[in-house]
Amino acid sequence: MSNETVRAIGQEQVPYFRTQEFSELMLENEQMVKRLAHAKNDARAVFLTASGTGGMEAAIMNTLTSKDKALVVNGGSFGQRFADLCAIHEIPFTQIKPEMGCDITKEMLIPFDNQGYTAFVVNLHETSTGVLYNIDLISEFCQRNHLFLIVDAISAFLADSFNMGECNADVMITGSQKALACPPGISLLVLSKRAQERVNANKTKCMYLDLKEALLNGERGQTPFTPAVGILRQIHQRLTEIIADGGAEAEIARISALAADFRERIKKLPFELLSQSPSNAVTSIHPTTASAYDIFTILKDEYNIWVCPNGGEMKDKVFRVGHIGALTKSDNTVLVDALNDLKKRNII
Ligand SMILES: *Cc1c(COP(=O)(O)O)cnc(C)c1O
Image (cartoon, rainbow, N blue to C red; front, side):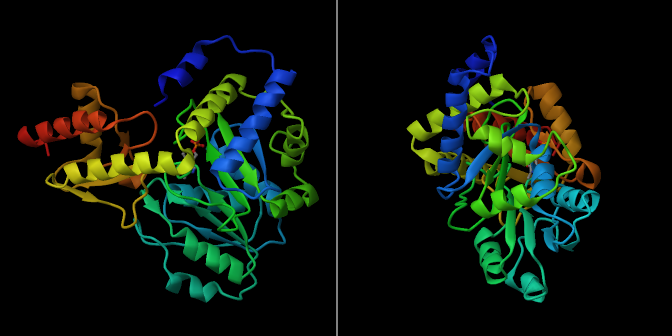
C-alpha cells in the first residue's frame, strides 16, 4: 500500500527522461538505495524495469557461469524459483532444503564446507512461508568458504535488518512493490565490487537484462532502455521520506512493531503461525479449523479486507497478512475485529 505523497506522483504526467533532471534523480536513487542497504562505497545500484523475478534472473545470469558451483536454499516457492533459474541458465547447483517454515541451521551447512562451491543463493525472507533465514550464519559460512553471495531481499529490504556491507553480500535484489510500497514494475540490484567484476567478465546471452549496459548507463544516471519513469519518481519520493524519517532502522522498527501487535492480538484465535523465525514483513497463518482460502474469500467478499492467499499445495493451509507499506495499528484492529467476528460466526 502506497502513502499519499507517493500515490500523488502516480497521478502526474510522466516526463521525458533523457534529461539532466531525471539523471540527477536516478543518481540520488542509487545513493539512497546504497545507503539504506548499508552497501560499501564501491558498490553500485542498478534499476531494471521488471518485476522482482527479473532482478533474480539478471543476478543469476550476469554473475554466475557454468564454471560456478552454487548452493541454493530452497525452502519454498521463491527458493524453487532460484533453482529453476540456475537450471535454465545452466549453472551447476545443489539445493539445501529446509523443512517448510524452518530456518537453516549450522548442521545443515557443515556438509558443504570445502566442497568446491563458489556461490550461495538465498531468499533472505522466503515470503511463501514467512521464514527469515539467519543471514549471519550464511554470511559466516560464505566467508569461510569464499563464496559469492546472492541475496534476494525483495520482501526483506526495509522490513528486516540487512547490512549488505557487514555480511559481505555481493548482490542484493529488491523490488518496488514490497516494503518500498510503490507500484510494481521496478527491480533494484545492489552489486558489490566483486559482483561488478563478474558482470563485466560475463558473456550474457540476453540484451534486455545485460547488467553491463545497466552499469555503464547508470554512471550518468541513465538506463539503456526506457524505464518505468513514473515508478522511479515514486521510489525517489519514498526513499527520501524513509531517510528523513530515520532511515532503514526506523522503518524496520515501525514494521516490526506492527507485526508484533498483530501477532499478539491473534493469539486466542485457532491459528498456528507457520514460521519458526518469522520475518517482520508478513505473518503466515495456518488456520486449524477452516480452509485458509475460504477465510481469504470471506474477508474479501464480506469485509472488504484483502489478505494474501497462498497458492499450490498451501492454498487451503496458509494465508498471509502483510505488515509492510502504509499500514497502521488501526488497520490491525480492523482485521482482528473481522477475524474475531468469523470466530463468533463459527466460520473459524
Ligand atoms: C515478491 C518476491 C519476489 C518477486 O516476485 P515478482 O512477482 O517477480 O515481483 C521474489 N522473491 C521474493 C522473496 C519475493 O517476496
